[in-house]
Amino acid sequence: MHSRPFVEVVKEQLESESLNLPVFHPIAIKLQGILAAKDFSIDQVVALIIKDQALTSQILRLANSAFFSGLAKVTTITDAVVRLGAREIASVAMLASQQSSYNSFTIPELKSHSQLLWKHAIGCAIGTRWLCEKSGYKQLAQEGFIAGLLHDIGCLLILRVLEGIMLADGGQKKVSRELTNEIMTAMHAESGYQLMQKWNLPEIYCTIVRDHHKEQSDTNDVLLALVRLVDHACRKLGLGSPPEPNLMLAATFEAQGMGIKEIMLAELEITIEDAMEMVTSAA
Image 1 (tube, rainbow, N blue to C red):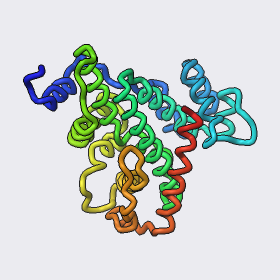
Image 2 (image 1 turned 120 degrees about the vertical axis):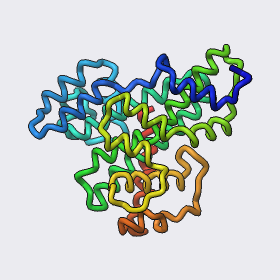
Image 3 (image 1 turned 60 degrees about the horizontal axis):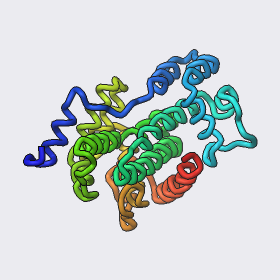
């Protein structure tokens, strides 16, 4: 294994049927199915969530965090659903299930990297939902949250592959941050797309995972354009990568094509920065 280029080893592991894929919580998927129906009930949502004690605990903690806080602490899932709304709870459930995956690394260097990715995912999720609501696409807000949260899922997958390779080598093999970044940049979009297909998630999310770094010729795919714009904003703020303070969001293809002005983009940056408080309080 050591005589071959390291990228080939990673590709081989990504294609392996025995690969230990990141787990996508089945309840989070079922919640999306329930909410797709117009006649769902709060009782249906609550009954599904309380089947998983760990998820219930995470949802309550997040629902009481600084970002989602209300006038008083919520103590039951029913209270949380009534206060925040079923669709908001579905977003929180998605958030909770993904947080577990990002927190599950045992190798310190990879765990540190995963936490940077987690902050980027949070920023993109919150930012895309906010931008949907403020730019005339409120009906896409929940999809925007999930799309933002999952768009870089391929990076998480690659970190999982790297951890497997390092652990198989008795922890002796080291992978530099530079090489990790290089591999993720080159491979995360397609790898993430394949993972989303295996999870059988809606094509709207699969497409965004695959195409969010491709140059676009139009903004007809509104959700993709919004995710790309928020991704730029997170890069500017340094969420998951070194800050790019000179990045002019108003000059991006997405902002120009969708007519999103500087004042809204400035508010977007503030919203994303405020969302980081949630990461701290819910950790």
